[in-house]
Image (cartoon, rainbow, N blue to C red; front, side):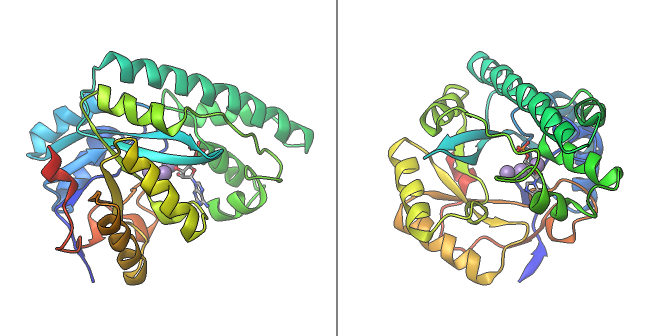
Length: 278
Ligand code: AMP
Ligand code: MN
Ligand code: MN
Ligand code: MN
C-alpha cells in the first residue's frame, strides 16, 4: 500500500539529471514529510554541500549519497553508495573519471545523431545539463524539445538505446571497483532498482550473489514505481542472499507521479533496513 515514507534514499538534483536544485529538492522533501533523505546524483557528489545546508534549515537528516554507473557482465548497472564521506579522495577521483567517460560518450552521441540529421545535439544537451553531470536524460530532453520524440519514454525506445540512433556503449568501471570505491569512502553499497535491468531472474540472482561476495551490503527493495509482486520478489532475494534492504523513489522531477519523494510502499518488516548499517 502506498503511503508517505519519512525515509527516501534515492533522489536526483540538478547536479545530475534532476529538475530541482539541491536546496529546492531538500525543501520539497521537507514539504512531503521526509525526515531522512539521501541525495544520490549520477556519478557526482557536487550537490551535497548545498543539500546539507538546506537540510540544516529544514531539519532533515541528509545522507550523503551517489548513484554510480558500473559494469557487470558487460551490462550497465547502477550502484547507490550511501552514507559516504563526500570529500573522500578515492570517490572524488572516481567521479572525475566517470564524468570524463560521460563527456566522451556525449560527444559521440552528438556525432551519431548528426548522422541521422539531428544537429547541435551535443552543444544543446550540454547547455541543458549546465554545470551538472551530462546524462542521456538531457539528450532525451533535447530530443523532445526539438520535436524528434513525443516523450522521454519515446526517446528511450527510438533513440539512445542499443541498435538505435545515438546509442553509444560505455566501459563503466567494473562492479568490484565500484563497490571498493564506495567502501573507501566509508559508505554502504546498494544495488539500485534491481528489476529495471531487463535481466532474467537467473542473471539477477547471479548479480546479487556476486555483489554479496564482493562485499555489497544492500539492495533497493522498494523503488518509486514497483508493485506488490515486485516488492515481494526483491524481498525474497534480500533474504536469500542475506543483504539489507533500501527504499528510494528515484525522484527526478515533479512530473512523474510514480517517482515522487517519499511516495513509497513501506519496507517489509522482516528485512534489515539499510540504515541499521550506519
Ligand atoms: P545515463 O546514466 O546517462 O545513461 O542516463 C540514464 C538516465 O536516463 C536514467 O537515470 C534515467 O533518468 C533516464 N532513463 C533511462 N531510461 C529511461 C526510460 N526508459 N524512460 C525515461 N528515462 C529513462
Ligand atoms: Mn537519472
Ligand atoms: Mn538508476
Ligand atoms: Mn537514480
